[in-house]
Image 1 (tube, one colour):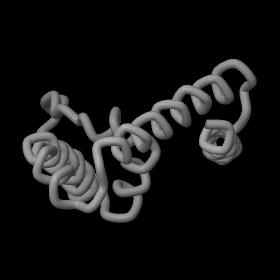
Image 2: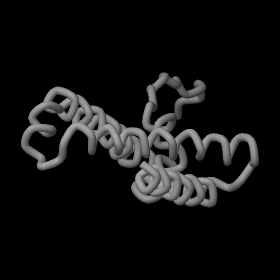
Image 3: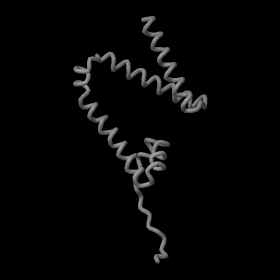
Image 4: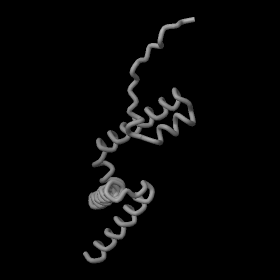
Length: 118
């Protein structure tokens, strides 16, 4: 029997930083090793899809049926929702789910008002 203390090596875990509680759910569902692999493969997959989307952005704009304005509108809606989410959770201390719902509804109402007034 080995009485020495176990040798611990540092294993980077970007999935825990990026996925947060979802990574904990993966570890709980699949165990420490399989959960680590699943979370980190998910992060790598998301990054790879992001790179492919950025590289092919002009192709997507040209052939998707949506114009550049549609993608700009979508980007503004996402950015405005994210800013409101941060304000609702950080400043007002609302729960994450309430903040997300309120941010989405507020952004869509603001967008509707701008489109109608415009």
